[in-house]
Picture 1 (tube, rainbow, N blue to C red):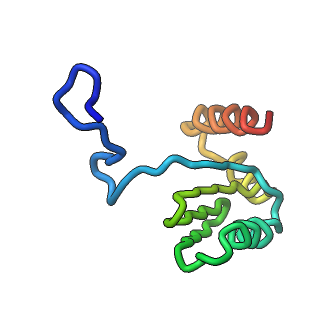
Picture 2 (picture 1 turned 90 degrees about the vertical axis):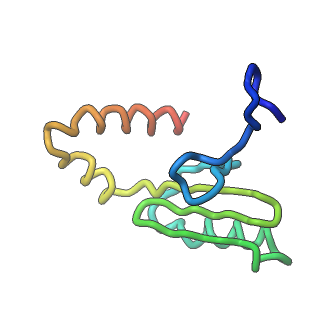
Length: 109
């Protein structure tokens, strides 16, 4: 597919990245302690080809990707430690915090 008005091909390659930028199919805020259940549900949904599933778990986020069917789920853990870290930002990061909170609230709607 060609980009409109260009001789270049359309691509999901992101300059400076290590690979393609995938589109997230599902993003959800989950409660603290529900991480294992979220990962388990993703694995059950891809039973039969779990060897193609990649799971990355961070402090407050989980990334699940099935390479076979290109299904991507991300989960953000809502917990007190995360909120406390946002509250204790230095003054120069207060604007970033406000933007993050607005973005977070819009996801909950």
